[in-house]
Length: 251
Image 1: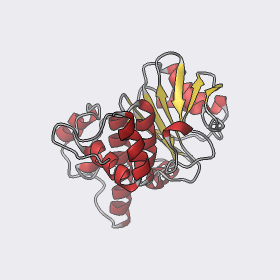
Image 2 (image 1 turned 30 degrees about the horizontal axis):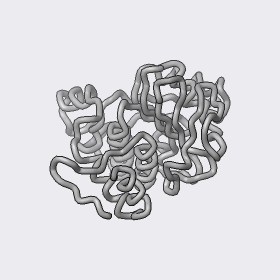
Image 3 (image 1 turned 30 degrees about the vertical axis):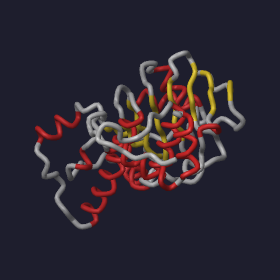
Image 4 (image 1 turned 90 degrees about the vertical axis):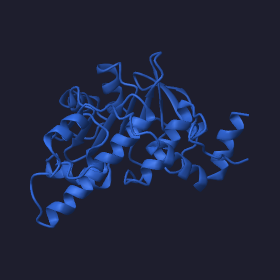
């Protein structure tokens, strides 16, 4: 059984568990791969969350491995431990109950800019995609397995959709999996390209005009049709067993 994309159906229909697995696996290939670090949550809307488990890397998680937890971090469903840093997500979902998807990891170049304590410019078109304000949280109050540190970080993030956490990593928020993916990829590309420009002694100001940057800031991340879908198809080709399980569910 193989999936053949068409212009009207770029990927098979994915449920929330499959989307979370695809997010982890595709972003692993985009620099979000600090070993066991990182958490993704999906708000089920009933006071519970789906999240990835502790002890498995993002590249190996399958839908059956995912957990369902309550907003206090108690395990309701699943066979793996709850991630140690989940208080960061609990604090966010309690403070902003409208948030659907939230993602935290220590991406390669995003973490560097968090360490520098600077939000880099978007020097190119691709780096500016995804929308949502990028803020810097420049105080490290300890690992976010501490609820006190997690709540302080969430207060500092405020209403922003992307954050660089000083001494830590990055945080990305959106209302769909495809928007989280685009925002996370664009943020890492922004950080990587800005580092290259900085090392090369390039200009401090981007060539992108203010009107373009203002327009991108208002983007909800859902408009780039095909971007997320192409990454999903790549992962389905890389893991035929996972692909078959997804396709079998839809027969």
